[in-house]
Every structure is written in structure tokens, then in C-alpha cells.
Image (cartoon, rainbow, N blue to C red; front, side):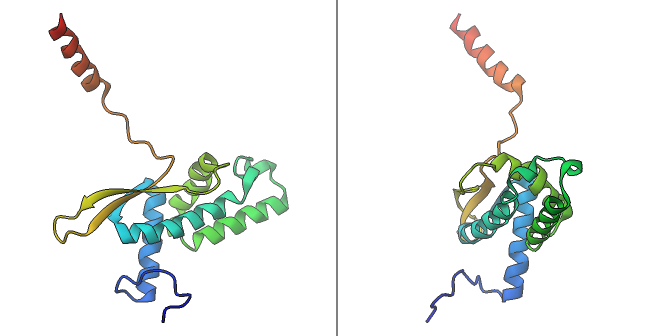
Length: 158
């Protein structure tokens, strides 16, 4: 029986699973959007949101400059960095979490990631999904292409 054994195994050892998800959380924080299989995305969401929550527990310390923090506040900040560092394997991604991502998500009561289903993978028909942080915005399309399309439409109407 599987009483109180949450999570999928993915036919991997526990150390392989842990390493895989640490790498995926790090990639998610670096790129703010990753494509993976749907079951992995659902498992990854739990770990990513827990890591983001660790950063958000700092509250107002996220926006306070380093020079203005007291010794106790700096200790809380370092502790949160180390706790999040258990899951995030890159210093750049860790600092991006605390300086860019967490301040944008402040005040949001959970639900920091979204899963978008994108169909199946051609090779093995595995259901694929995009996992992204909710503040992620696609890069803007080239304005010349958008302007050109509307300009041709207005010329043909004349």
C-alpha cells in the first residue's frame, strides 16, 4: 500500500529524481518557462512553488536595500537564501529569484506557476506541457511586422 507516499517515481532512483527536479527548478527560475512532460510539470509545480514561497516569506525585506537591513534581518535573508539554495543549483538563478521574481509575486496568495498543455511529443506521444511563472510575458513581436500587416490591409481597403 502507498499510504502517505506522495509523488510519482518516474522509474528513477530517489537521488536521480531529486537531482532531476533540482535542475528543472533551476531552469524554471532562470528562463521562467520550460517545456516538459505533463506529469513532470505537475510534480515540479509543487517544488517550484515551495521554493518561491521560501523567498516570499521575507516580505518587506525583498525590497529593502542591503545597507538598511539590521543584523537580524540580514540573518533572516541569508537563512532564506540557504533554504532556497537546497533546491536551486545556480547562484544566478537563486539571486534572480530573490531580486526579480519574488518582488513581482509579492501579495499573491499562492499559484505562482501555471501549466499549459501543448499536445503530444512526436516520438512517443507523451503528453507535453509548458510550466511557467505567472509573471512571464512572451517577448514582444517585431513592430515592423505588425505595422506592415495593418498597412497592407488599409491600402487594399482604399
